[in-house]
Length: 554
Image (cartoon, rainbow, N blue to C red):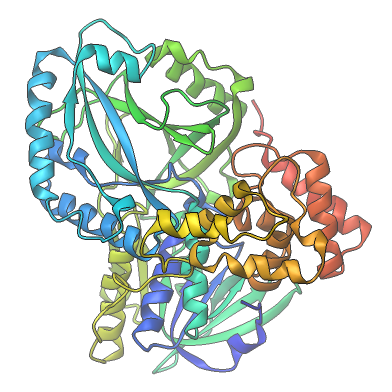
């Protein structure tokens, strides 16, 4: 996957996608797989903004019972299965627990789980037993206390267990979609910013863009423009149309990475002590849940929300945000006894919301929005407002159907629900992993191979091929199972241009905690050798990574 921005100016594409998060990536893959000519650009790196702020859950839709939204539940169940089918290395079943308080919840949950099992009765159509999703079940008070140590006992009547999916590495999922798109002809470039557009042509639009790495301007022509820029949707449409839209309301979200696991391999929900009114719910619990999920010997604790106004470029997580969320979690779950030292990393992003009511409660946008700006007199531009990872592939299918309609072409059948993405061609995950470990090169231990399979799936041997260059390629980066070959691979084959690209998105080095000064320097010097950096560039890149681990302000 080579970065070549000059080719972007050499043709007229059917569709230009602006934004390389999960939604832009899935649309690029779908559109190209159905025969369209496609270009995708992002002003930063792929998956470097909102798509990286994720609790890494592929929802089955149990929570939609509360709203009586069975259509959305079916959609989630279907897409959870599709993601396990096409990205078998990245999406795995995860058991979840919700404690029940009071007799009402104790009586309602068995019915809810039964309904959920009936609605998702076709969930186990995959042949791989590792992807099996068991029926939900209720548990006693004692079992709930045993599985979730330290939860509030007052009013506790038991708990409910069900299964969702977990994405092992969301950044690599986006990269897998992008690599799949590139392999079937999509022209892709990171660090390309769209500045505006020239006067509309009859059959196409001419977009002015800037290659931020070499400071050159590009003209990209396309018949349809897809604006998939997340919180920057308004700003992007304004640049393209010289308008002043301000339609998307946003909320800031904070997600903490904590350096310990609370409940084995179970994710669990804890009722917030803050009152919350869900006006759309058939049954209003009167509170939100904080959700704590085990992940790579850490826990993801989410999420805190707060209305956001202003330019998305100015968004930042502050120490005040982190401390406030720690306090809220400790009030809801005193057993956690979180301190700032327990927080090894933090994620933040901006998500779309519908409104903030008089009580300050945020109503998060529940449904995606596909906005055809032709209704505003602007032809050839579509904006996509996504809401979650789980249904990104399905939403992409709908967007591509619309693109074909706007092009005046008949849409071929979508096959992205059954076609494995890069690394996803594994029929039986456990057997594949076992064989990979057995056949591993002598210089690599099982932990390294397991890590490679979980990140690269059926294509993990691409990394092993680098071991033929020299023995140093098997060198581990610090105490992690990440090896030097992955750094080289990220640069040569996955368009990594900057040190943060390697530390946060091509590898796991910085996604859960600071990897250490020595590891940063090793990675920076590897990139310097590959890309020709001087000493000043090395220090600047290291400083950029270190700044990401520091919350801004008070």
